[in-house]
Length: 158
Image 1 (cartoon, rainbow, N blue to C red):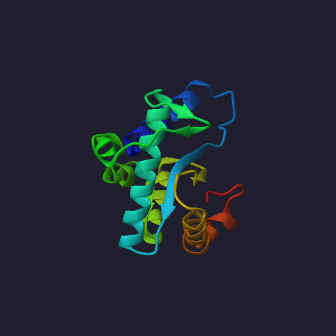
Image 2 (image 1 turned 135 degrees about the vertical axis):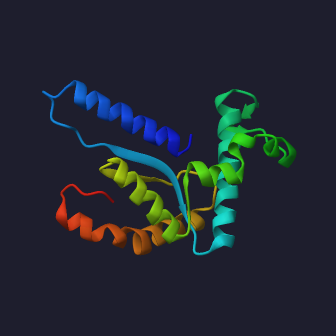
């Protein structure tokens, strides 16, 4: 689901807090599939990798493919193309996938909604090297944007 779901979840959380004023407001964390690329070409490849991950996850979850020795039967490119919900464009819209600037903007929007913490979900079918590079970009270029906030509030968003 996309940001509409993130907004809906926060609205329900806020409502629960209002309905139970005797309980101190707990912190709330948002977990999103995240990929940070250096440029548009790298981001597009990351979105494609995450699209494939979700196509396979969906097939596994719905028990649509045989699994032999822990490996699911391959999906063809044509089969994956039919799964519009998991298209690379939808992955970019519904997850946090982009350049460092894009990722910062997305996380700032979640912070403005009231989320206290952000959790970087990196599990996907992409190579270890791509995951490491994405995480390194997140640490080096995204997290510093929240550093000032970290010093003002403990625990901090970021």
